Length: 114
Image 1 (cartoon, rainbow, N blue to C red):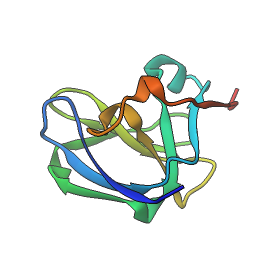
Image 2: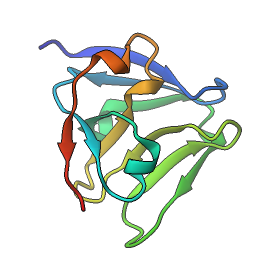
Image 3: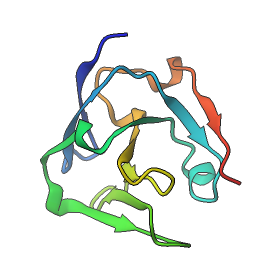
């Protein structure tokens, strides 16, 4: 697969980002927060994502061990990405935020964190 640069944003456009990925690792997690947001996530290294606009409009939600950091737009509440608990050098990117993709058409595997 080819590594491509994708553009993404929250719903209101206050937060914009780019991510370099080949979409090789797409998951849906069953932990308490992920089952509620039901997002398909692309797992990539931390340095693969760049916030290009509105970093000050991101807020962080943490729970449990407070290791993972879940990033949301302060205006529209959309989850854009998170720093992973199980991989401190990894990021999960919400595929629903990527402009060029239909996240419903992409298969995912279960990331079992129960």
